Image (cartoon, rainbow, N blue to C red):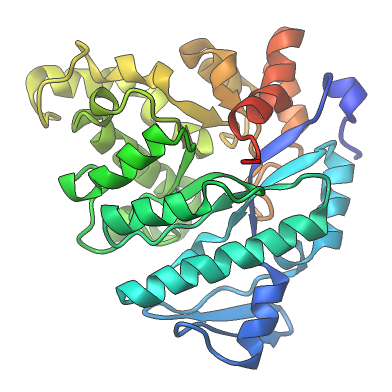
Length: 344
């Protein structure tokens, strides 16, 4: 079934803000020899990258690595633009500081090459070294003026022993706020939820949503949005479970079961309207709920392309939310074009 085109879905560009890629230029480079401990090989199921400290990735097929299949999917679904993010599995590894900086630069350069190959002003979310807040802030300042960079994709569990809500990460949040750089928070393939013995094969179904929920909950409870009210934070997967169970967090704050300090607002859920959410909750009613919770101007179309659990018809899912025409057009692309602008 062919997806809706731009005229059917609303005016203007239709922008998918949650789409992953492994740059083919990087894979070819890694096939010829290792870089910062990374290497790659072609298999009959796709490219496999050997990541320092993590080992071989799952095979990355043509939809992840090649422009042609990506364009075909976009044409079929009605998506006109994608904001490209690196695949979390190759964004970082167990690297010493200098190698982490070099790998982030190498990955950003390769992402820029893929954006150029896609054409049409394609935007990219950059990678920053995240072993501490100072290095992450330095990385952000390096990429903020690159023309294709529209923001930063930040792993919610960046390194062992590093907490995004801790004081050691404050320099990064200050730099992001001061320079108005949007930050997309994305859980890794192997996050805290992997410790659940009963999770089994439900990692992509529930595990990543648990990781989303834990990460933003910690940031709210530790006062990040009080200290940096100008931060632009985008939550993938519809914000995990938090938007839909926020009253329980409020209850935990009230009873001190979920408490890290006094907040400027009376309850944690009061901060949910300050955040942005993608539509990769995969249903129209969920999108309608998010629009009612935070406002349609805080919701961005996101597919989670090219994974099997991504939204196969993300434009149709937005239309199924039953929003009014102006709100629909905002979610489909106007919000993204306002928020995730090319830096030059």
